[in-house]
Image (cartoon, rainbow, N blue to C red; front, side, top):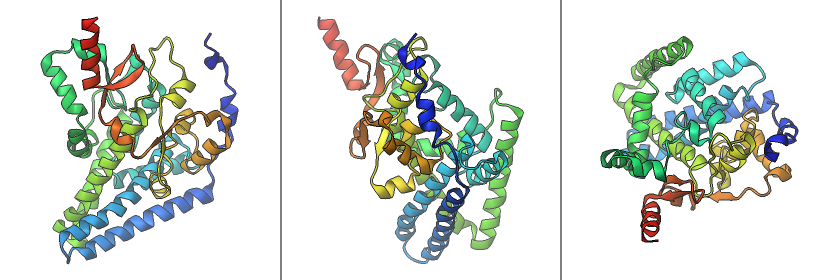
Length: 338
């Protein structure tokens, strides 16, 4: 049996950080939700000036919304409060602010945690990734579609629009009744929220504020999600060799961000720690990483290097690394020459 599978000592290590603290959780809601609401007020007041002022103000508003989404994310893992009901109520409310249905998103996200880094179980809650061999077997048309999907411009412009207007708004046949009802409830609640705010400030003002905030924040969220599992030294395995610990630590990035960005993203850059134990509330992730030898060998991914990851599009099983389309083509050409 794989030695890593046998060694379960890490469970005791991370287990010390699995306990939410009510005071910290409430304070985190206050220092995220209140500033977010205040930014809405400031953006509304700024509409009397040139619109670029409002767009600039949308950036910190997006930061607070991302922070609220991290709380929503923690609530889905049951890590933000001890109470299951509190996690659901707070999570569902914050999900509405982020235009994201609680049950549907978290069902997919739980499957993502259970299958992350497993080449035989791709496709749920992750960025779809072909191996080099799979890509070469595709028709020219399907190769074109895949490259268009992986293109950074399309992914981070059309991607947020698709997520907000389509993916988060519709149900599927394989969804449970509870998930479907939650999608319907979220959609209806969003309609009431939009109407209510529009009655207060006007439809035009609502749209001029809501559209940039929700789309830019989703763009930032997609970027974060992308770099968490799409980097050159990421680990992928077939089911026969896959194990949870390796998939968590080597298949998830340690995104080392400047302090202000780390705060706005709720420590989600410590994604390797989060995947090892989703029950750790976001405010304990950095401490868990810093205090334990288990994470000393994890190589950080710095902000500048994340832009290089955007070129990666395929998993090379032979070389055990993510490669760009150009690299895959070059490797294939060299192999044919040999």
